[in-house]
Image (cartoon, rainbow, N blue to C red; front, top):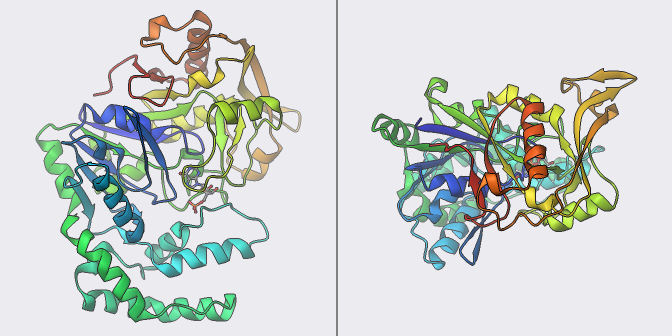
Length: 426
Ligand code: IMP
């Protein structure tokens, strides 16, 4: 089973970084397929905590080939800083490969992201990193790609096609001074020195690895409910974190994918705006936030917290074709007397079993809960599934049955050794 896609099943921040890190031990290639530095992964190796935004977590292993695929939007300043941060920590970055087709986040994308967000009557709560505007340019066919960093001429030519329009928008609509071409050229050619040597045809690299029978782990960022097509539009990101995004974002046929593993929290969180039926605005929500350290890795914003939503997860199982679940942060619930699971919604007196496609309907949905007894035991030191207290196992069995997908991995803490493999993935 060599090609595994790992996706977030909720609103991002499910702990994909940690699960990627654990699975990377058995992978040969770890590849990111969408998003950019709106994502943030925290991985703990021994006593050291690493925070990564762009580089796949597989980089923390000496020998893994790491890929940033064509579907990712790259802020080269952040990428260069991250490479330096890893090198300073003694991490080998020579196995990092970057798609020549990946699009670049430019200074005007960051400016526009922030200015557009401020002028919206209904905010999305973007991370302000320029992600949306960079994808807009990609689809507008005026984007600047990694390949354009090859020379001053190629970058200047690409900028000539887009910068005058961006400056007009910035100056006329937002009263912003705009950006100087030469300043961008000087800055970006500095990044090019580090990035161009890493640039390659990553689709070919992945295909060659697959043909050799190597294990390939495709790592999504954000989560299913933030997907531009399948998420709670318009409160979404501008790419496809769902499993289908892996094929397009890496240049890999969908029939090459053998397994799709969904990373899911034992409860639910969301950053930014948008509906969230199981949100807790009370002491239990605060307790989950503090125990789960639910503050954004990228923006530091407190995350909204709530109970596990099985209606949403059934949807995630469907749109991603999930073959298994990696359940994280189970230990956060250790102190609770009871735990609730939303099994259906009530909408205008009607019972809904399926996740509504209309965000306005979702906003009006009230959760219907099943309450289960808590296990009231510290799980953080437990090493195998069978050692889990009976009530914790019953909670997991209930979730699995409700969403119609087996649980393959259970995580009870940030460290690698706080992970139980119920069924091996590779
Ligand atoms: P953008 O991706 O910066 O455009 O933000 C769009 C929405 O996605 C906002 O609600 C963000 O809070 C959310 N978002 C983006 N990246 C992440 C992530 O990695 N984790 C959780 N939420 C995210």
